[in-house]
Amino acid sequence: MECTFTQEAPETLATECLVVAIHENRRLSGAATALDKALNGEIAAIVQRGDIEGKLGQTLVLMQPAGRPAVRIVLVGAGAADELKATEFHELVARGAQAASDLHVQSYASYLAEVPVTGRDAAWCLEHAVMATHEALYRFDRLKTRNTRAAQVQSCRLGLRDIAADAAAQALVVGQAAANAMTLAKNLANLPGNLCTPSYLAEEARALAERHGMTVKVLEKADMEALGMGALLAVARGTHEPPRLIVLEYQGRPGTAPIALVGKGVTFDSGGISIKPAANMDEMKFDMSGAAAVLATMQAVAEMKLPLNVVALMPATENLPGGSAIKPGDVVTSLSGQTIEILNTDAEGRLILCDALTYAERYKPAAVVDLATLTGACVIALGGHAAGLLSNNDALAGELQKAGDTAADRAWPLPLWEDYQKQLDSNFADMANVGGREAGTITAACFLSRFTKAYPWAHLDIAGVAYKTGKEKGSTGRPIPLIVEFLRGRARTA
Image (cartoon, rainbow, N blue to C red; front, side):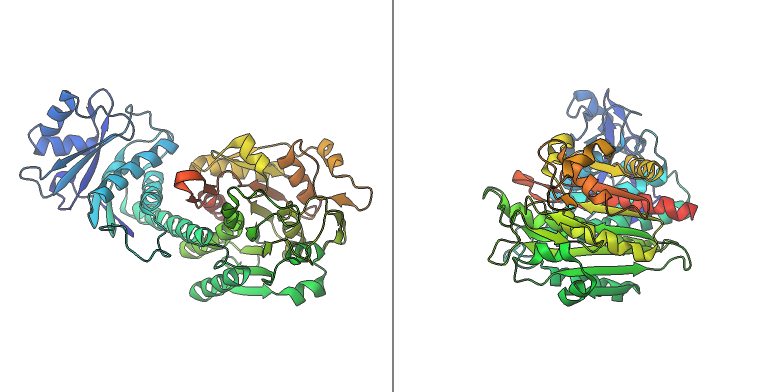
C-alpha cells in the first residue's frame, strides 16, 4: 500500500473516497469547511442535525455528493478542537482508513493529517498519518487459502496544505520507512514457529542485507561453541532447530562508533523443562518480536539513509523440552566467563541475550539497546501501553524515553538499583538466572546489566507492547517507532 502527498484543495480532488474531520461542538475542520462551502452547507446541516457529534472515532458516510468529484465523503470525529493528543491522532487516522476500507475502495484521499495535534508540527502529522494508515490497513492473510476481503486499499493520498514541499517529501520518506519496517516485523512475528525458525530469520537477514548493501554474518552452532557462548547454546540444547546469532551492519558514517541493537529471537518458547501452561502457549511464537523489530529497524535505517553506523545482533533459537535440554539446577558458562545457575528454564531470553550483549563489546559501541519480550511481570506492571525501560546510563534512558514520547510509542523507566542485585545470588555459580517473584522485570534487567559494563546500555522490556492477545491477536510492530525516532535523534547530533 502506497501513501502519497497532495496539496490540492479537498473540494476539487477526484477520488473514490474523501475523508475529512468533524470536531465536537459542531465544529468543522479546515478541510471539512472548504468542502462544506462547495456543497452549499450540506455538511454543516448534517452536523447541526446531530447525525455525527464529532466524538473521536465516530464516522458517517455521504454517498455521491452532488457536483463534487469525490464519489463518497467520510466524516470522522476528531474530538475537541485543538486538544488532540498524539495517541489520539493515530486513532483518528486509523478510523478514517478503516472506514474507507469498509467501503471496498482501492484508493482514497484523507485530510486528517491537517487536524492539529498538541505539541506536534505538520511534518510529524504527515509521518504518523502514513504509519497509522498502514497499521489500520494491515492484514496477515498469507497463510489463508481463500481471500476473505472483497477489495483491498492500494493507495492513499494524504492532504496537507500548510507544509513546505521539501518537508513533506522528507516526512513521507520517514513515515513510509517506519511503516514498512512495522509491516516487516509484524509479518515475521505473525508467522508460526514451524515456519519462522532461526534459519528462516537468518535468510531474511541475508536477503535484507543484499537489498540494501549491508554486511551480514550468521554464526552457527559450531561458531558459538568455538567462542564459548554457553548461555545461548544451553537454551538451544532441547531443540532440533539449529541456533543462529545473526549480525547485520549498516555503515552510514564510516569511522564512528556504532549504535548496537540487540533483539531477543526465541522463535518458539515452550518454557523448556519448566514448561508453560498449555493455555495461550501458541502466542509464544511472538517471543522473537525483539529480533523481528531489530531486523525491520535495519530496513528502515537503510531506507532513510541515516548518517550513522548501526549494528544489529539477533540471537535466535527455540526453547523446547527434551532429553538433552537444560534442567533446573544446571550451571552454564557464558561468553563473558561468568557462570549462571539455571533455576528456571523459562527464563531463557536473558540467557541468549547475555551472550549477544557480550559479543557486542567487539564493536566498541557508542550505545547498546536491547529489545526483548522478557517478563510477564512487565505486562502486569505496564500493560500494553508502555515498554519497560531500564538502563545503566541516565542520558541514554532519557533519550529513549523522549523518543518514545515523540513517537507516541512510550517507554517508562524502572529503577536498576544495586539493592535488587542480591536477589540473583547463587550458592553454586556467579549468579542465578532468576531472582524470585518480586520485581521480576527489574531483576531480569539486573541480570543483563552484569554483561553490559563496557558501554552505555538500555533494556526495553516489550512483553506488553509487542503483540496483542485475544480477538485482535497479532504483532503490533512496536517498539519500531520509538527506536526509529531514537536513531534519527542520534543521526541529527552525530
